[in-house]
Image (cartoon, rainbow, N blue to C red; front, side, top):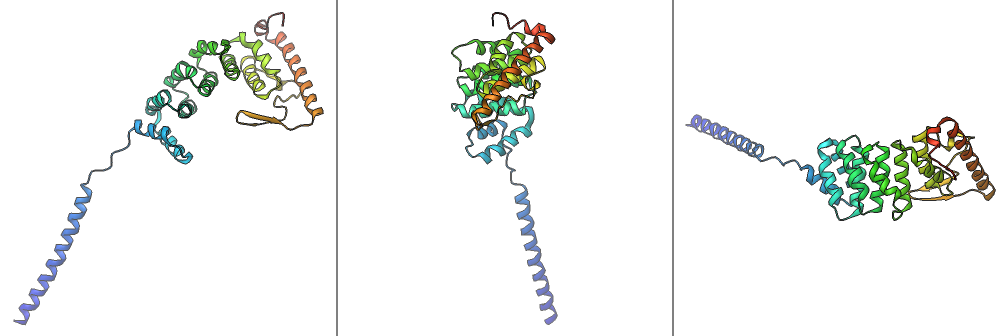
Length: 263
């Protein structure tokens, strides 16, 4: 009788253990059968990037969009084209030009739509990028910007610079006017264009540096040099420009002829 009681107790304990193990297995099976979270769509990711106000969040979403490659382009462009906030549109155009600049789709968007956006900042960015990315199909829209007196001067200069990068020789006179400017940014644009079009800029002559000691922060700049040093730099600028024009007349006559006379 005592032996039977012991056997019964052993069997009861085993049953409880097996039952508990079965319950755990059932829980695991139930968890594994739960539906996995669906991956976020590219369109939603682009929308989140557009709406993100935190810089770190913007950076993370930007990296995710870049990792998706060209399949993210159309959704990023929708935000660039349709979002009501021009800052958001600019951020999207910057992403397209900086990370997807080899794409023909991006080339078309920048050269066709970006340069005609209502925002000055976007037109400036895209006018600059069209030349930098060698988007030859954009030359007509660049000319419209360059020749339009209603456009802000910095946009017209960006268009001039880009036309030079596309190999349009008739912009040389405008480039020279920009290179001799007293302000840094026009000089910068003029020298970028001259280097691309002719192979040289003012820094190739007599050790002149067209920055002239300017401290640049965004679109703002300041000059922190003594007056005598500043005027010495201005004299060097004019001498470098004279030497550049002499070199141009001798070595690149096919471009120099577009300067025309009288000056």
